[in-house]
Length: 227
Image (cartoon, rainbow, N blue to C red; front, side, top):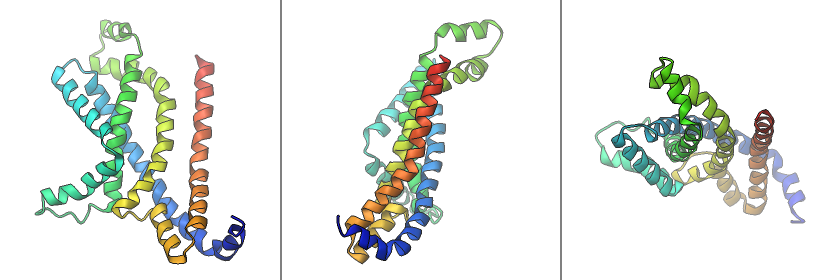
């Protein structure tokens, strides 16, 4: 630990710009995977609360399987299995970045599906019935009455999920994605300074995630005051 200041003084000008550059890739993966997870989660939450039993069963099967698999296993399946199942197709577009976004998005979609379902079911069923009695269709009552209120309920857990997702992007290095953790391993092994490099990476992760933590706290306070 006593040598860290000296190590950083000698190497920080070379390490930091490179790590920050790949940190942008980490943020891009997290943002894209979050958007995909929200879309997938909302779709399967609606299927999970559908009045059709077949749709509920299919949604439950996806949620339980995706939540039950470790993220690393899901990343491996998403990235390596499709090209082997369909070798005749052109897979040049399916990069490690794409595989990381899809894998994280599918895993997160299963988690958020249950979050959204809980938010929807937390509202009294009479609201939907009242909306339909006024002439709204089930789709309109969901879009204009249920979902806006459910959003207020699920925002804090969704924001907390976003923080966890940012840290989960470190697993994407296992499928060869050139994000901050993959670059950090390369620097650490090349310069024989793993402790110094990974302490610096930990600080960068903290700088990226702490603003999200503050945003979650502010959001939770505002929602509690408005109740």
